[in-house]
Length: 51
Image 1 (cartoon, rainbow, N blue to C red):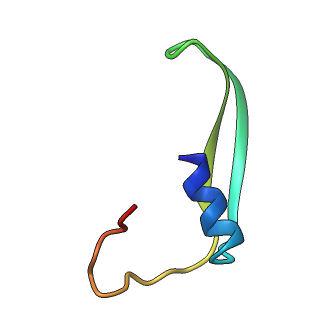
Image 2: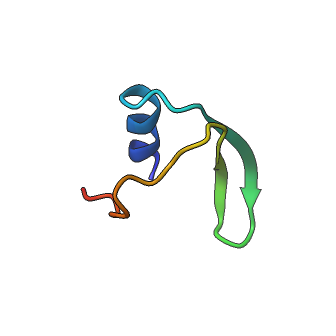
């Protein structure tokens, strides 16, 4: 997912904050992050995003 976030930040110029945490016992990951969209956005044409 992080590669999509990078594209939204760099190409689209959206303001997205990443909050980082350590030690998620549920998944065994040492670190993980939560993304927070800080800009207001409007869906375009009701279509989903295609990759």
